[in-house]
Amino acid sequence: MIIQPSKIVTLYRPATAQQLQAIARADWLAFGAESLISGYFYPMLHSSYARLLAREWNARQYGEGFVLQCRVHADGLSSFQPQTVATARHLEYCIPANKLHAFNAALCERIQVVQHYGIAAPAKRPTIPVLNATPLAAFQTSDWAFACSA
Image (cartoon, rainbow, N blue to C red; front, side, top):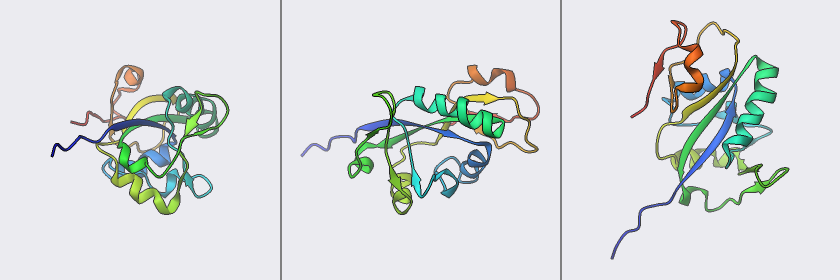
């Protein structure tokens, strides 16, 4: 019997600095209650959708927004179907709060920051594992400690 490797799905999520700090406290291995909106967690299938929300909502509302990327074993998403929010590029899963622990258990690597919008300077920033440092190059100052996950 040959065991097939699990299919991996890449998902994206806009985040605020507060949500980012909670994820950093979890060693970049879990989303917490700070990521819930109205009792649900909404990971997105397209980075463009997450970038739009991080830029147009989080950055404007909170001074900065982040786009996170996570990779999940497809088996962990099998009980959920992607939902279209506006267009075919606006697809997201709707994970109830009581299922967030199962979603986190399906993560197959650390959550990564792939984009940053805004120029706010919070008092303390977490160490951020950066997937692509290019968009964050302007923020490589002594205020930011950058690390790449292995």
